Image (cartoon, rainbow, N blue to C red; front, side, top):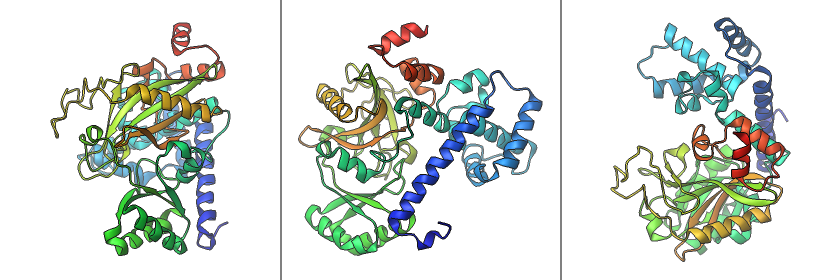
Length: 393
């Protein structure tokens, strides 16, 4: 399987999935092996960094590190002592704590000691958490967009098709003629990357866009457009604005771990934080937004009330969440993105078996750090999160 150009698109998509699994398993093993029990001395840190550079060179991601430093510390000169120290610190946190370069800055890891860093759940660490809960590294059932559609079709409220090559564009033509507007996403994509809005009036451009996505990602899921509730749309009409809910099953009963309202920014057609969107935490009992990105009650760009806003049909959402979890009892920890449609029905946008845990945000929301989650995954039979919280104190 060395010549990727000889693959069919389905084989290429599967190949990429297995490489992703392999990379994250390697990453999890590295964290297990090299995360210190106590704060490393300067000499030990230097030895570990040297070892990572030598033995894990292909996983270091220097280009990504360079770009992230440029975005966050634009005044640093490449090759300066301060720049090199920052690169080394990012590499150390990547292999010892599982943090991507962007997460190093997002979670202010340069300002944290070992005790602060190990509590976080960045990308590499969160895969260990989800694997502990779900007992296996699951990518097949819900993470591919079209597989999720087939598994949870009753909750989608819209049609979806899968394109596996240029020859499938005729299927797309039939689809767009029926629905006029649709969204296309890489079948195994994340963070809203590669998601595009397509319209019937620009069919020639649609074909060019889809051809490019197929060449880059192998498979593309195309979904009927969601006509969303006008109140939810008012935050950012260009995107479908969703509620992200993290679901945990304890004693075989689903519970909301946390919930956040997400909406897009600028010209973006998606609400993903990874594509420039915003997430505001919601009181899971009442459905009232309790935080905003900058702490202001009103959004600075739109003037829309954020803190104190009541998410519509909250009890109905709680019922739908329970039904989705009951359909997937083998998933003890996973996330769903839900949209309220024009008929005030909650519909599933997508599900994720290894969703971002938000660094320190989940610690603030639930009181659980990495160690607490691993203990919870190992037992997980207490009736409520509150019981676990009391026992962890």
